[in-house]
Image (cartoon, rainbow, N blue to C red; front, side, top):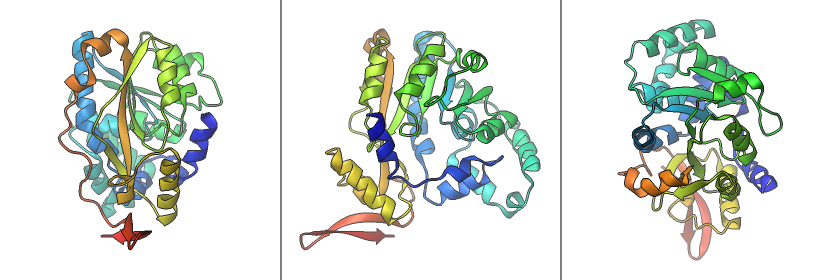
Length: 312
């Protein structure tokens, strides 16, 4: 299964360079150009789940954002901003010409000027030291851990940072990390958390579910809804991703064949919480499949032949 996930992930475009800088300007310009929207379309669902978690457990949410990059989920869930508005902020010519240290200073003041919505405190987890450093420096995260748990272990100091987390969140890390990373993080948490995972349909989630079940956790999938992540970068990524989905027996008609990566929502919790609050009683989805989207690759049928076209 681990080999399968790694092999599938190779079908996606590589954006490693946007996570190695000391500020998020390239991150927003690169992904924004592909209509990256999963943080925004997932936001109302995550909000419902965080509210339910806090009420059920009578506690303050402490969210460990896995694959947090520059802290976009913390920004969206703590302040009245979204990915689209932040992309516009960093696209201004006045922001583009700033030195990184000046941008970080301004961003720190920018976020501190907003009242915190109060959904909880956020801890970052990512393989990128630079991204973690930025999110900590501007005050999006209470703390953060930069580590690769696929190949390494969690240090005692980092385990102490992870320990208070009672919610584990991912809006795009599955595929880059496996259940091995989650198992090490769960070993460090002080109590069994709720795990909220938005998973691209091209990636199998079975081994995650099995690993969580060994810890007495029940996993539910939200039925009847998918969440757009972004457009495909190019025709090659589009074709290879559809081939991966086909190999898994997944029908892409009306979903990825329309030119958009689609994610599903999985929520894993202690069994008693899942029985008391089924996911369908918590989550209400009003929309989220489509927003204002630019030109994209689509799969069309013509005279019995399947072709790729560009839809604008």
